[in-house]
Length: 332
Image (cartoon, rainbow, N blue to C red; front, side, top):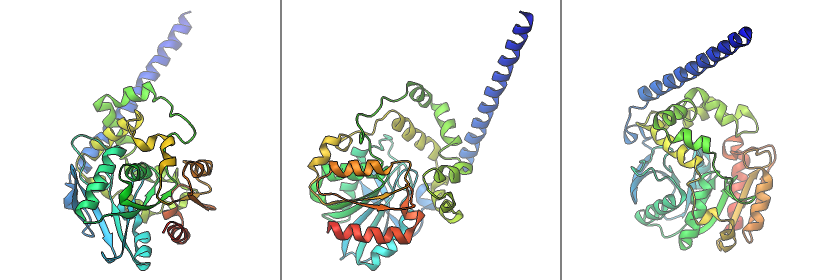
């Protein structure tokens, strides 16, 4: 009995030391984040873009091409921003498009709303205000991954403003049925502000993990090059990035991102032409989801890319641009 008690005390000590070590690591990342995030977004935003009022905030927008050409919006995915579209923008300009790449908050260099409302209905309202302030009546839109939620919501709320959609490996909820209830444990962890900040600092805004996290979405991990990583981490120096992204993670975990486009039944009501581009090796949103989604959207076209994962536009830009050209031809 005495021996068992000693072993139990030893295990408790080990557990407490491990807990203390984990806490120290999280605190360390939190301190590093506070030191790193000391710049206003406008002060360090690339000079290739500009700020345009879009409802409650200003969106950071990068444009290319002639304003008299047909407008096309490019909407990035989670933890990304407009510059990741640069090679796509160059191709589209050659094909006589007026290209508008937008940073959707809390990612990139756009302002972040005091309300912390980063969800699809608010994002759709911002896109509507953006087009109004740019004096654009309607446009084609390309949406990637998580960004496709806002794109679809915009198309459903403001159908007259959308000429056609291209969804690239869209990360949508409810494709295979009702969304699972959020984890009570995860909600509890992210509801505690200091813990939420530490968890975000140790993961999403931790530059030491950027290559690993990005690699999770790629078929060939070597596509997470130093050049790509430098682009992805550029906004990391903005003030309160970890705090703002922590609020986003809290809502994401709690499934707060709901709207018309979170109900699969509404997909059948889409009347604009839609093309889907999908990496055949995508493990984040497997190709089966694309095949299912095609049946939900009347007349939609599905283009697949062999040997490609979840982010085709950085995995093989030449092949992606070729497929995007074909997709745009189909929906014009």
